[in-house]
Amino acid sequence: MAGRLSLNQATIKRATVKQAVDGCAKHGVPSIGLWREPVADAGIEQTRKLVRQAGLRVSSLCRGGFLTDPDNKNAIDDNKRAIDEAHTLGTDTLVMVVGGVPDRDLIGARQRVQDGIEVLTPYAQEAGVILALEPMHPIFCADRGVLSTLKQALDWAERFDAGVVVDAVHVWWDPELDAQIERAGRRIASYQVCDWLNPLPPDVLLGRALPGDGNIDLDRLTRHVAKTGYSKDVEVEIFNADLWAADPDEVIAEVVRRYHAFVEPAL
Amino acid sequence: MAGRLSLNQATIKRATVKQAVDGCAKHGVPSIGLWREPVADAGIEQTRKLVRQAGLRVSSLCRGGFLTDPDNKNAIDDNKRAIDEAHTLGTDTLVMVVGGVPDRDLIGARQRVQDGIEVLTPYAQEAGVILALEPMHPIFCADRGVLSTLKQALDWAERFDAGVVVDAVHVWWDPELDAQIERAGRRIASYQVCDWLNPLPPDVLLGRALPGDGNIDLDRLTRHVAKTGYSKDVEVEIFNADLWAADPDEVIAEVVRRYHAFVEPAL
Image 1 (tube, one colour):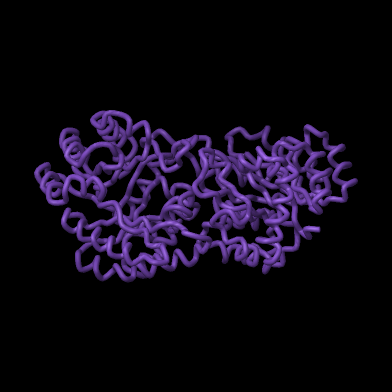
Image 2 (cartoon, each protein chain N blue to C red; image 1 turned 90 degrees about the vertical axis):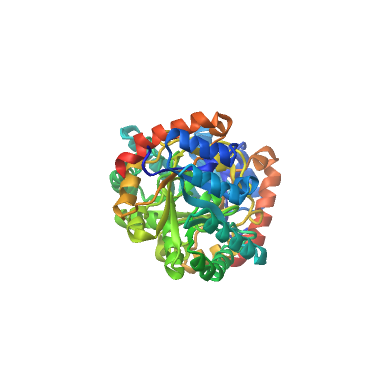
């Protein structure tokens, strides 16, 4: 068994929930990170059943967020549904990708995210679901996530008693990282790993590699996260065109090997 | 005349020094930011003569840096040549792009940059040239610049009495930006503008747009920079495949229009 490894579904994007769950069971992966879209395809009750029958933990649900549009009433409603889904699926962690800048007003966009989180906080707390604020690599500030550093995520998380996500690919470059991980302590709701693909592919969203294939010192980062007392699962989440084109079964087998080689020794 | 506008040569990458200088003169651009490669093609003395005859200021020379290789003796020598060239060309500002991570050791790479700057500092000071440390957008941390934020640049600049570059495209996303610009004060050796292209093109290096065509609030940023007392030229530096394919003369005319519309009112 790969102790605390969680396979994030995005790593085998083309697989159905059933294929992903079966793959985890076959390869001894004890936990899975689910995405709302394939879960909707499979049906939420059916997903819950499949996961439970396989004896898997659900480490997180991706994703809520996208709160930066000036009119975000629909986004608030959708986030409430995401909170409900997380609760139903038996995970305490909803990953929040907060949304980009619809215009030139970055400060306004960041304010709207905070306003949205404030509205969602009591709903999430009642459901026992942590809003896990994910700082996104600044490359995504315009189109996907105006929450850009772990420091900023913690400023917000402390205000709303929320959690944060530490995803290696989003934070590895940050000169303040060590100090902010220490500050984060028990607020780390999800630790996600992959590596930084260099050179980047034409679609930077897919600029992720298997642990060990890029420039991130995952051993060092994992030790820092472990030192905070983080004891939850470690998700391997890789958006990569080659992995998506490969046989999911082989991808899971390789993820397990990389986890043992580059992550587990540092936990 | 476009008061403090400087045309960075990279904006019209295919043009020779002579074409760039003539274009500035024709369109009333009073200043130019030079690059070492086209200057070497034209000859440094010839470049000096052309610039002087046209009555242009040289706002900066791009670029020194690339100090992260474990064996960086050659890089040190090359940086000394760059300092000499800046002095000869009559600019006090050498833009430093510090280099990427050759392996997984980001902390070691950052240390080697600082060691290199320490070695170069007396040489630059004797030549009257400011080493202008340029924080690079974190997207370039792996391949081009491990100096990732203005805060980090200032930490180093204060240690070595160096300058910093504030380039809109590299820093616009930074939640700490306002405070760090205020901290920077007179250390801002160069202020460079362009906009953030969204969606990004396949080569992210070319993810820059004309002022007004992207997500950066240049008015706000420029006001903050101006408040520090910054009184030097403002470089428009745009790496953009469409602009490079266009007629340089038309590009310069458009740069002047954008400067008047999006930058000058805030100075």
